[in-house]
Image 1: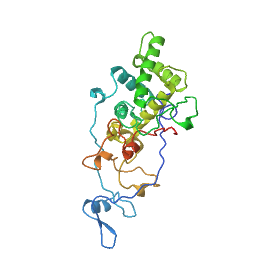
Image 2: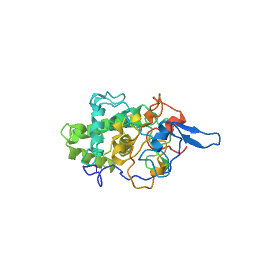
Image 3: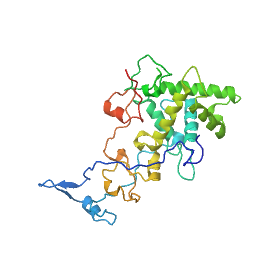
Image 4: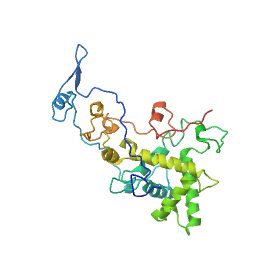
Length: 293
């Protein structure tokens, strides 16, 4: 279960694997008549900088990512009510707690990310197959088997879990429990030991865990990963155009991470309620399990 160790008990996959990148011309590059590219202005200056790679490809310095920072204590959720919001904050804090190795889910505004996703394509299951019949006992290969959209599942499951807590812990709701009690209950939810006629609790836990990890590691433009804290912790460069020259060098990338927010004057956040645009759906939270028709 989620506890204080990031290496063996956290719900946090710290493995970073290199991947292929698409080289995009840096700002200031000039295409010559022969089709060659030449650096100009700040790009040329960066190419001659001491930290330029040996092959001469330059690096353009940039300020650390600074999307609009949200104070979690002052944030008013758009979807969740007060009891649901208290649950989300308590649960995500146990799934990725702060420790000596890095910030936790609350430090990086993971609850804000989840709240925003409830009004986005993920929350509305906008590109999932959501027509019956639903067969909950079928293998996971067949996808999500419940008529409740994720936002509705969150609402029903949280209410059911809080009722379970009141019956089990002398009237206390989940957010009022001790950390050890919360962790044990999350373990039981994951293992299918907590059930309700109102919502499939194990499915809910799967979404909660998925969304917590996404909010911790996603681009800050979506509300979580405040100030790119997780990216800075693992050395991920973010949305920089080209860092292929640093792959395989076994060196920490020397420039701060860059958010999508810095790539244009009017970046678009997660789509609003019921969005159906295919491109927008592709950037919604995680894997959208779609049932086969």
